[in-house]
Image (tube, rainbow, N blue to C red; front, side, top):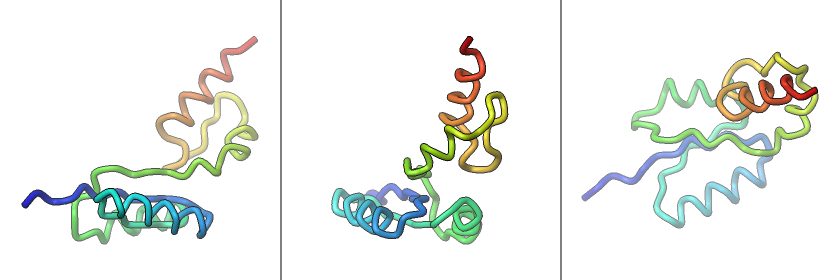
Length: 93
């Protein structure tokens, strides 16, 4: 039997996190959850299974918009897409 993929869901809003976990579970994923970056790091440290994907909630949009150009947020929320978005905003005239 193949193991299910494990997703670490990081979302601040309890209702959104709960519903997303439920939907991902229905389609066959094992879901770990955390409410923020520090909690996500703790879950990753203590996880007894391999985490295949970290899914970070999209509710942080307005916070990203207030980040100064060229200064992406640090930590888990400042990686990947958000950091690239900050770079692109900094290049706009």
